[in-house]
Image (cartoon, rainbow, N blue to C red; front, side, top):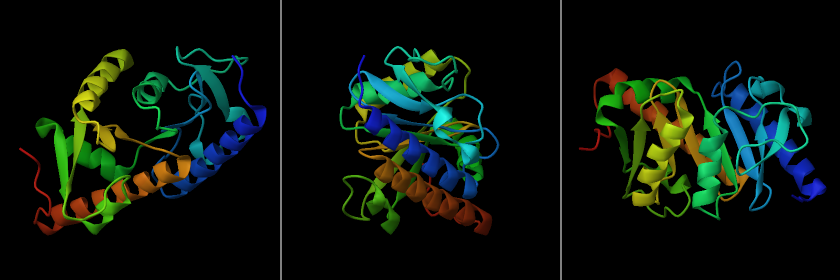
Length: 216
């Protein structure tokens, strides 16, 4: 399988840069999180397993095919690679996927796990999401049970996204956020928007007033 070496270098450097940004924000502590970019319809660049995201170098990003098999590398890709590949296979417009482990995302995913979703509505920040042009809208964030059975989780995500294709991200309970975009820059913007909204929800709960009650 062929890919453009110059494109790979560019994507590797972009992934390293976003890793440092997300680590400094506290959204990918320790070795948590995984990031990827599309190279073509058959290959993606993705972070290796178990490496601190604030210390990424080009050697910590490898190329895998759509079967999760590494190309020309003995390093192991993220265990959650199938969740990235699912998104690329479902939507040709997706060019990047970011998975983060922030405190706020983790807390909200635990708190609303019984409802299996979190509703965010009437926030101006919702306009940061691709295709959203007004605050008079709502973003339903599905929450899936945490599991080490990644293929099973991927099936659940696929079923949900097939029914709700306008979704911009999802939470895994006690785990973290997955979001995606038509570029790595857009995807980073989506992470920032979600984290802003999650922080608002956490603050509202602390104050004892739910700004966006959970969807029913």
